[in-house]
Image (tube, rainbow, N blue to C red; front, side):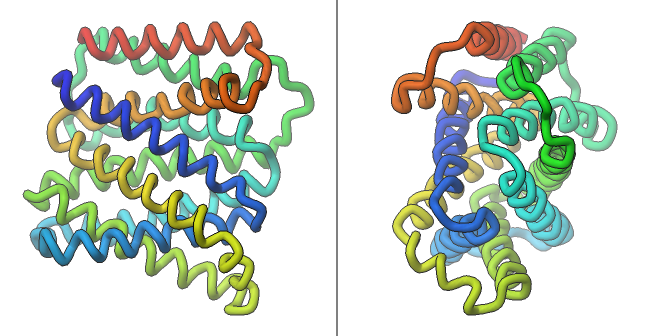
Length: 278
């Protein structure tokens, strides 16, 4: 992974933490996700007018990605209904790199240096520690939904990595991903809640547009990066968004700097260093 790609994926991680924070707006999580995805879909449509359609070889991957992103949105909304972001987000994002690494080695055929494997495992451990340390009486259903979210993340990451490579133009591919995702997600929300049930979304248009822009930018960078470096490495570095979220919690929200957060930060940074040096 080159320095340029490495730094770009860190920017994507920061944007990812930002759009997940938007899901805390005071409307139902399912509606918030629909609003964010719909906004990102509009940006995908605009981008497609500039870069055109992706090559037909990537269309099966696009279809698979659209379905997987829908399941991701549903699993994530269910997790957020049962637990706070501080629990759900680290479990989902910490487990995903390990699942993605296994998939990229077995299915995609990407090769990883042993040091990179150690780095991914170290990073994932640091992320998971943010969620699990010091908690009592964890909601089992919330944890299960968070793990299901991680599984869907790993699947759509692999699909989009392969799709972007097949498309020839990763920018055209990501435009198609977001356009389809926005349409399908909004249709699913309308079917589940009805048009009247979607009305609270109108009270959060501003944050929704901001979240959609951050989601679009974050994943655009990630998909491009997966055409430049092994998918598992990009997926792992992208999940440092959890570290950015923890820093925001301490610096901006004035939450206490607990010892386990320091240990987690050390593990995450150590994992990054191992990945970068592999």
